[in-house]
Image 1 (cartoon, rainbow, N blue to C red):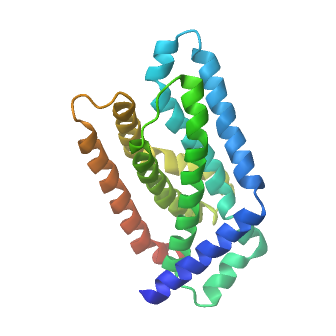
Image 2 (image 1 turned 90 degrees about the vertical axis):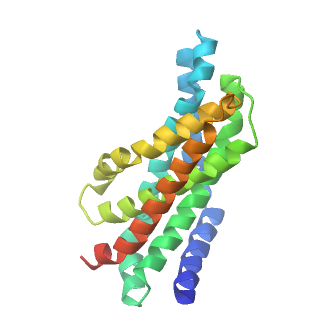
Image 3 (image 1 turned 180 degrees about the vertical axis):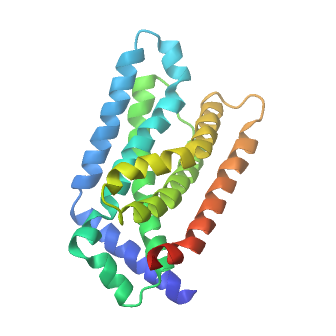
Length: 223
């Protein structure tokens, strides 16, 4: 277990260092997300009440599309330069590789959401709540755990970038329903106490798909 965690932390440190030195990926994905928020707000600007009601759904739709861009590029460097096969040939545990890449994607998606939160509040005229940070983290964990698994799977196929959204989006539907609903309740101050049930569903989704991905990734990479 210690060796697995050490390998995962080494992969995480490598990816974070690359992101820190080359910030172009984060900037381009952030600008893409900001553009989507702007387009949605312009389309609904004639109906401010409707825009505020739909803010949670439009925000998570923006995060989903932006995260997809990040996931597609997270393995591009390793695949182009043959680093992925090299790490496996050196005896690196596939679960350590997955866990390290998943944590790096988790950091990326979580900070992307934090960066887009303030523009969303300004554009959609809504009040932010500290509870949103927990929701953003749980949503980021679900997208990263399942997204990293499918990104690894599709990189082995020609045209994998087209396959990734086709495989990933249907699997993320339960997570999107939960995060949109719990975000709506939080922005509306949860008058009837329904937030806890949706948070439990969101947490269960994260735990199940993280464990399933960890248990099956070794078999997937052996194929």
